[in-house]
Image (cartoon, rainbow, N blue to C red; front, side, top):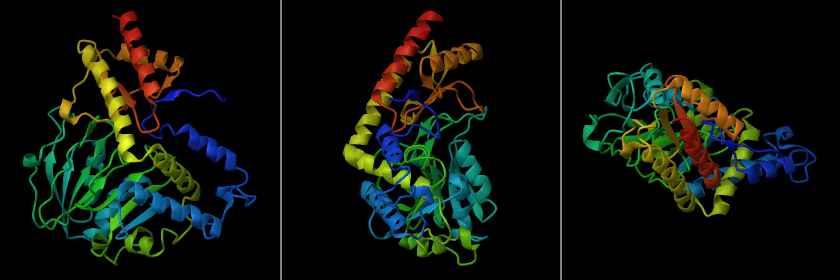
Length: 366
């Protein structure tokens, strides 16, 4: 077996080993076609099956009905920062946004090009840090907004919405769910749309999935560039042009892996156990492992911490952890520190090995 490390990268992130093995087995000959999936025409019957099954498995896992369209699009979640307001606001409409981290700030910046954008809450403190998720009564929401936009998990700040906000009646919820979609079940009844790039919990980099319901799709403008149009992409089943076929194929494999585990109830239990283990270890030494995120806002996907506010000690930790087969633990360049991204494919055993290393490191570097 090939050498494998425990990967805590924030994205592209670790993929399930059974998925990688299945992809490897089909690399040269997919389903008797004599070709790799990467060589198939995106309009071939062989690829059509891959495409359709990935869409259906996506819906099945999340409990979405036939009133939802699943779009496979290029460009990453950052592209959706302007696709969404361009389709819905068209220059004059209103939308509310909650600012809870770096990515929501970027979404707000792009949205302001296309309509009347109101920041319903800015969670940044005086130092620009995002340490909590606001409560419902802290949101200043407008009843005439087209949608309320949130970022459900903040990979850099290490915060996560554990109770989703309730928009005013007649206002849809829209969300960037890039880094925590499929970690547990969600109630999608309030949502008009949500989107997530694949490279956290769903597959490799290269494809972004947009889920949009019929009623929200009907609000979209016809006066947008063709490649940006949700209506066109929905009508053409994401095949208006050649899409990212190989990433979609791998996403399909990951979704079947999730189904095989027992679905999102099982995944939530596994993720909760992993996060609890790690946070318990951090909380056991608050003088050493310094965590600033409010406990009720801690992310189950991205744990962030400092080591005694000592950058040299943090660099040593990251270097020695990598040598021990624990990679991807350096904090984001904008905030520093340590970050462990414990997405779906990261095993409980991997988290246990990280905790064991932390304990040994703290003992050796008092």
